[in-house]
Image (cartoon, rainbow, N blue to C red):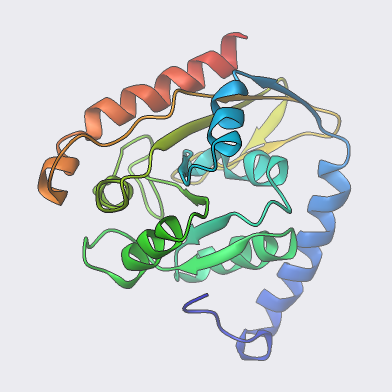
Length: 219
């Protein structure tokens, strides 16, 4: 996909972090125990062959990308240096990459998302990434949904024990042998007829996301 630097172009320290991070993730994640809530929302989309957008908060990225590894989902990851590690690890566990940001509605990443969806593929976005504010729905994912007609599928995770990094998103790392609950919300289409109208639907999709988080936490 677009924007990918070769491994040889990366600083040595980043290359080392990618190798170490990928190995550590596999060891740690192999101990996690998953349970799924409202999985019928995902099952119905896949049964009908409907392309859709996974929508997840940036801080919950790690347990959710592990849960959906090796399913050939295309994931949008920023081109900032702090996105490089996530991008490389995601690719190593079976994701296809779209590099960039949908902050600007006409950007390359937005066009790539729409292209993937128009080809019948599944994509994943973190609508509050890459820099936050956490839990705020940026308009890019809504614009991609509006242009493609694809529904947005909220997905959230809750762990019974984990670490929270002191980052803007409180990045979640489940501890060894953590129980991870993954919840899905109802697939929802953007109803607006324009990108500007789609942006005004952000509060609705924030509520859908937060309801899904709550479902994961209380189930």
